[in-house]
Each structure stands twice: as C-alpha cells, then as structure tokens.
Image (tube, rainbow over all chains, first blue to last red; front, top):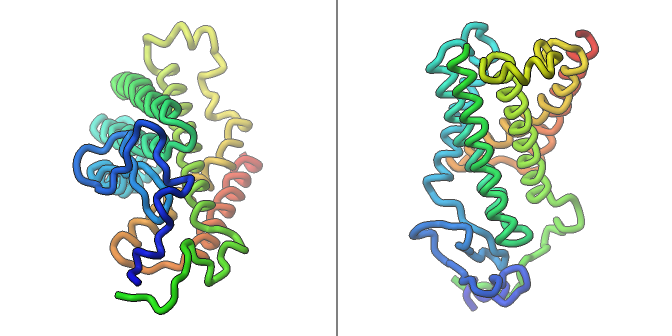
Length: 136
Length: 132
C-alpha cells in the first residue's frame, strides 16, 4: 500500500470545489482567486511564488525601517525613507489582505470583495501617504 | 515506500486534537494582529495627512481636535492593543521565515514564548498609558 492511499478522498466535503470550478493540483501558471489546490483533503487557494517571496522580503525590510521611522526623529521627514516605507507597507498589506481573501472561507464573491477592499486600501493610503510625504 | 498498517488521515496518534490546536489558532491570531496593524496604519497616515496636507485643511477646521490628538493621554490607550499585535506579528513571522530556511522550531514553545512577549508588550503599552 502506498502512502497516497492514506489521503482523504477528494470527495470529502471541504475539498469539493464549488460548482463551475476545478481543482488545480499544480502551482504552475497564473494563480487567481479561482485557483484551488487540495492538500490532505483541505482545499485552498495557493499563493503565487512572487507574492509569497515579496511578503517575506518586505516583512524583513519593514522591521528596520519601522525601527528607524520611530526612533530617529528626523527620519519621517527624509523623503526617500518615508517613500520606501510607504511602498513596502502598501505591498506587504496588499499581499496579506489578498491572502486572507483567498482563503475563501465563505464564497468567491466575498473573496472578490476582500480583494477589492485591499485595492481600496492601497489607493487610499497611497494617495494620503504620498500627499503627507510631500507636505512634510 | 510502503506502510505496514493502513491509518486514516488525519491521524490522531499524538492525540493532538484533544488539546489546543496550535496551528489554526496561531494563524488566526497572526492575521488578526496584521489587521490591527493595518487599522493603525490607516489612522496614522490619514490622521497625519489631515493635519499636514493643505488640501485637507477644511477637514481640520471642521475637526480641530485632530491636531495634536496623538499627544492626548487617552489616545495612548491604543498602544495596549498595538504593541502586542506588532510583537506577535513580527516574532511569529520571523519564526516562519526561519522555518523556511530549515530551522526546526517547537510550535508549542514558540507559541507560548511569543504570546508571553506580546502580553509583556501590552503591559508596557499600558504602563506608558498610565504614566503619561
């Protein structure tokens, strides 16, 4: 008996894709909210490698940048430092919100609403952030 | 590779399901902490933009209390939530990155260590609020 025989069959409740959707068993190609992958009987939307790498790299960069932003009094007025911090925050938050929406705990429509909210967050904070940096 | 005896998945040989399920719990806490930080970023950026961006001066005239609100004592109460959220989100994410590089970390010990540090940060924030 192979190890794969232990896997829960794809017909388990939480692994069954909603009507009109297919189970994507690979990570190749473009990842969208409709992409689904089943691992040990639990389905989820895979995060693309680019987004995954960006979130980790931006998270590592955020630590020292936030540290400098808080502890160096003149740092918020240095345009390139504040611009870099703003760009990384926007990217990190967008990917994080996208991933929460992509969990698709309720429905695809609600997930799309979540993605729309993350785009709205980027636009609003981007506009206010750039205006703030230019005003300082 | 063969297995001697068929075991249905998910296995419960360590009886983990009878106790605290760390994985789903930590994932939810980490994402909640991320949400708290995002909420703070919105308040921080929009609030400062209202004060410093000339185009928002009508809003500042309508809501003059916004100028200097970050220096009010009651405003510092948010640190009681913000500090632990930052500590938990940072340390847990660093643990995830370390594990990506192959470092083996006990999920139970790391959860409790990070949680205690986050609670300590909450008390630090509360102390700052009280002593302000």
